[in-house]
Amino acid sequence: MLPAALQARLRQVRSSLLLCRGCLGPLGDGDDGGEAGLCARCWKGLLPLSEGRCPRCALVHGEDDCPEATAWDLGDALWDYHGGRPPLGALLLPGIKQGETGWRRALLGRLSRAPLPDWVAEVDQVTAAPSTLPHRLLRGFDFSAEAGRRIAGRIGQPFRPLLSKDWLSGRQAARTESERRRLPKRAITLRQGASPAGIILLVDDVWTTGTTLVRCAQALKEGGAAEVRVLSLFRAT
Ligand SMILES: [Zn+2]
Ligand SMILES: [Zn+2]
Image (cartoon, rainbow, N blue to C red; front, side):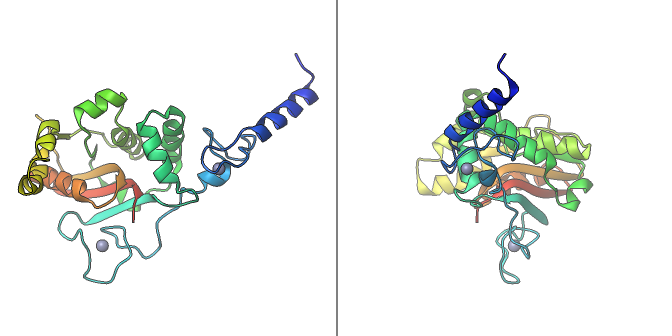
């Protein structure tokens, strides 16, 4: 066993040698908020979206200009996908999908502590935008569903996997332009035996154009949901 002073000195030397995987600066010693190979400054890139954003599409725009007008009444995201330098969401999510377990655990931890919109507490069920079966098998996890479970646990409501994404029709969709436009709607359907009821919270990891979320919301409403609300971890603007 080394003397405590020497151990502390070794820790200092070690942390000055380790580089943050986001900014390539010094990683710090872990007491300053650094986590999973990213320094505290990089983690501060989990930035909330702009004040004054639309309560439906979570973008800042003029009145009567909302691109999501018919799909749902309330939609928001916790963090700006391009927030921070380097943009943290754009670093984390692709990394998590490629198997960065430490980042996945750290981000879910931050999701457990992040402030949620007030209206999240009013929902009856939580579900997630589906991934295809080959993706789930390949990755061994479904990050949006994990996020949905985390949120469901926080508000004390059930998480239900209500939607499925059809891999085959998604692949066939590449054939012609008109088919591509027609098929995605059928590619997201209600799971067999799923019965959405009341207000459904639809969770996704990143909300970009919203096309997938619109398909999900339509399937949920056609299946009997009274209302759909959208909460994404990240919003790309
Ligand atoms: Zn960093
Ligand atoms: Zn809007």
